[in-house]
Length: 130
Image (cartoon, rainbow, N blue to C red; front, side, top):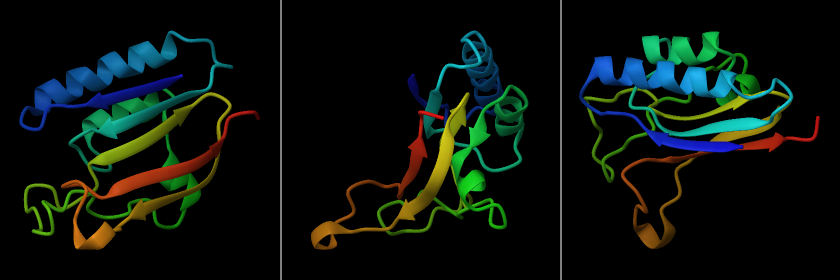
């Protein structure tokens, strides 16, 4: 099961409420269900929305792959212009249930010198048959 979301970029209360909804939704599925939550959560490591998700059983794939470096740094670059409003990671891949994280990386590629997005891509290599 894959859940893709994009949380509000302005309202902290809206992000917190959305995280509670995602936590409740994920918990409603059987514990043996393999689940991934991906998207622009517009919030960084250690914030209330992320803590809500983690308390409910969602696991950060980056932290699982990099236990001594649990934050990859900024994931929004504004097409090459640093964004003061998001100096930390705001894009996430989280796992729930029997999902083994093999690796996770932040992709800084610029094919033909062009940014494909105003965010860096984050990817996780997972094994869902554990």
